[in-house]
Length: 130
Image (cartoon, rainbow, N blue to C red):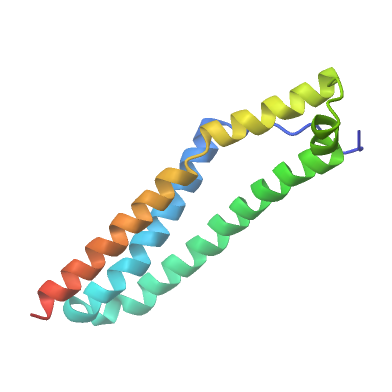
């Protein structure tokens, strides 16, 4: 096993905080199309809010993705499972981390909301310009 600390799932409040940051960023970008018609002077500020929010949010998601990949490669989990090796307690802990991390992630909710917000922004823009 490598010298890296054992991976762990972050607390729920961190997960929810970054979920909300991603949601605010998504809402900001999708609101720009509506703001063009109703408050064009707000566009630049809302764009910066969305861009800066996404910068932080996607860096966080990038770190989680790398942490998961490193946990798999540092512990040779694919090779061990492929070779049908008996797993050590450390391997089981890493597998539990991976499964828990995926289970508590709000990534799928984020994708759903981005889809719905995009659809809503399109429909509002169409309604405003008919």
